[in-house]
Amino acid sequence: MPYDDSPPPTRRARPLSVAAALAAVCLTAAGCGGGPEADGAGAASPRPGADAASSTDPTPTGKQPEPSGTASPSDSGSGSDSGSAKPLPKGPLTGRTVVIDPGHNPRNRDHTREINEKVGIGTGRKECDTTGTSTDDGYAEARFTLDVSHRLRTLLEAEGARVRLTHDADRPFGPCIDERARIGNEAKADAVVSVHADGSAVGNRGFHVILPAGVKGGGADTSKIVKSSADLGARIAGHFVRTTGSAPSNYIGGNTGLDTRNDLGGLNLSTVPKVFVECGNMRDPKDAALLTSASWRQKAAQGLADGITSYLKG
Image (cartoon, rainbow, N blue to C red; front, top):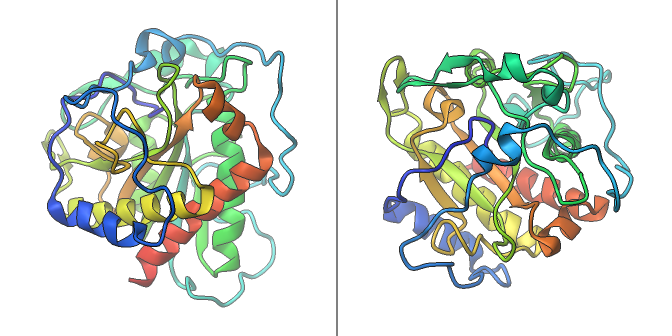
């Protein structure tokens, strides 16, 4: 779930171009239709602002995720250059910069006072960060997002991209939502992807990509990135379906896998193309079984990488 989490506004109609772009990508993707939406009014998931997002993640117990496999922490610092010590190979993404934003920080739960301090998001003020959600067995969203982010970094570097992480669990907490946006802006990133997992009700399944709405005020101005971010998000959604086999969310986005929000500081404050990706619902047992599987996390990273590559290649 987004680290600056709160009940989303009523879903607005998305530009037809976004839906068309997703439909075009999904033509070859089996199962892109997803299941029926929970309710015709597009009711959003119960965001765990008064649940996991605002409380300390439980100590992992019970069923644990499979080993990370190829994923491994790097020694790169917050907002640092790629953790690879070797020169990047020449590839289709040579000369491009991608910032990966792993949602939350595993150590946020030890710093609740600090992460509850409010920061500006352009249209108001919100908490610096949250702890994130977890599966019922205690697999924390922050662990999931780091694992997928490491895998995604490896895949993008293999294509020649310069990759930066907003953090690598190398700081006591955060970074705050405004700093996360600033890292992408200062890197002049060609694309920024914030990796998350949702915390909704049992039966709510699937992934969705959150796009920035048109926001202007208090230092926020997304007018120059709304269209490009929508393109990035649609391409990621299409490739995520194809690679993971997961359907678009059946509870947010009207079966498109896309949702537009104006209340997320990480999007409001961005000046470069950026999206959030909720890879699945950690509170649904079937989705949780996927999220705790190392082989599925590799597929998720591949789907994200393919979508980013498609966007950057144009």
